[in-house]
Length: 395
Image (tube, rainbow, N blue to C red; front, side):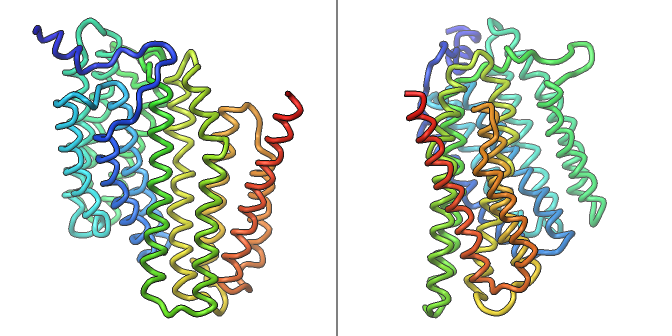
């Protein structure tokens, strides 16, 4: 077989409206990021200060971006092929180094975090470049552009890992800014210009399923953290009530995302003439607040379980209100992208949470948790009935 034929065997040519299932290798890879999400939520819980929140946010955005880029690459390459599987297993090792470095990323393990991150980003993109056959010149040039951007950001990641204190935060923020702007700039590089949206042809159904499964993993992490905390506590009326509120809140988040939104997104991107553009906006960017909201809510659930009585302190209020608000903000924007209109139920939920924030300091953590869960239930029921009525009216 020629070199071109070998590379072509790895690179997937997507047929229109084709749907490729998510592979077991991809699911296996994603398990590392369950651990990463747990590390992020625990780090936020342990460093809930303005600086700690800023640092944890940067780490979350880095973890999200390395996962997102891997998802794009496994959409372009065939994960059932042995070389691509080996790539995923190597990336899993890098992901474990990143995950275990998160709690001390701004202390003693900054260089480990930076080296693992930069190696994963640049390494897999070079692999994509080499695996893309010359018969796909646009896709190959796209891989070269991505490699150039990630190589530039890698310099700042490593420099930040070698630096200390605020210099590390600044250098890593620059590195992250380069990577997040790269897709929006369509990976423009001097002389060769920017990629075309047509160069980002993806299999939409696979992409939607991939992100949906990540949401399930994030929700599953929330269940695991809540269950582990609850198992160590004395079971009183307050702790049992807090546990029940947390569980219902997680189920409602699943309902809001998956009841109609995920299915509609999968259908739209599968039929879209520009799936790359939709994947970049609706999934790569707009899923950030959705996942962040789930993580912050998990922090709130743990705080409430540990101290359900008394008055709510600022970090309990911020996490209990901020988590659901981030989640609703992400889902309303995501659903606007796929439906073309803003969900009134989600907007009402955001307003209700904002009003609740004014009174939250005087409420017990348990009562605050129950109130935020009730608002989320209201959003889910309202949306379900409105969509049902809309479907009946169009029938």
